[in-house]
Amino acid sequence: MIFGKTIVVTGAASGIGKRTAELAARMGADVIGIDINEPAIPAGRFLKGDLSSPEGVAEIAMALPDRIDGLCNIAGLSGRAGAVKTLSVNFYGLRALTEALAPKLRDGAAVVNLASLAGYGWRTEVERARDLCDAEGFPEVEALVARHGIGDAESYPVSKQVLILWTQRAAHQPLFKSRGIRVNAVSPGPVETPILSDFRQVLGDEKVDGDVARAGRAGIAEDIAPPVLFLCSDAARWINGANIPVDGGVEASINADVIGF
Image (cartoon, rainbow, N blue to C red; front, side):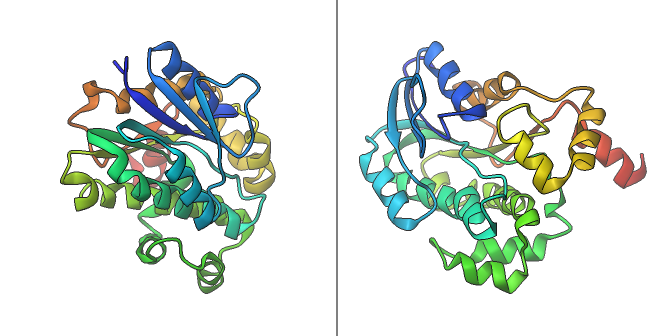
C-alpha cells in the first residue's frame, strides 16, 4: 500500500500524528516525522520544526529531501495558544509548507490535510473562509484575525473551515494538479488524544460530549491513521479534493438535524 514510499508526517510527537508515523513505518514506508517536540521513540527519522512562522517553515522545507511520496499535515493547535498562533500553525504554516515542498513531491504524490468535524460550518461561513484563504503566502495573521474579529475560542473551527476550503482549491491548483499531486483532507470527530482536554476548555464540554454521544464513543488515534495513509496510497489514486469524515457518523447525524431528513 505505501511500502517503500517516503512519507512526511507533521505533528509526529503525539496523538494522531504519532500514530500515523508509527503505522506508516510498520507498513514499510520511509517516515520523516516533524514536530516542535521530540517524540520519545521516533518512527523513522525525526526533524524538529516549527510551523508558526515563515522562517520555521523555510527551515523545515530546506531540511527535507527530494522525492517525497506523501505529506501528512497533521500538526495543529486547539486554540488555547491564541487565535494568531492557532491560525498560523493550523492553516498558514501548513499551506506554506505544502507549497514550499511541491517541487520535492514526486509526480503523483499525495497531500493529506487533517481537518476536523469542527470545520463543518465552512459553507455558512464561506465568505470569511474565502477571504482568509485568499491571503497569499504567510500573511500578517494578526491583522486578519483583527479584521474578522476571530476570538481564541473560535480560532480552531475557523482554521479548519479555511483548511477544508483550501484543500478543494489546491486539488485544482496548477502547482499540484499539473503533476498529478492529489490534495485531500480527513475530518475526525472527537478523538481521545492529549488535545481533547484542550477542546473541552475551548469548545466546551457540552459540544464535545454531544459529538461523542452522536458517535457512540470517542475515536482513538488508531481510527484516524489508516484513512490518512490510505489517501497516501495508490489505492486512492482517483480521490482528489475530497474531505473524508472519519467521525463515527457524527457528520451524518448533524446533517440529518440541519437538513431535516
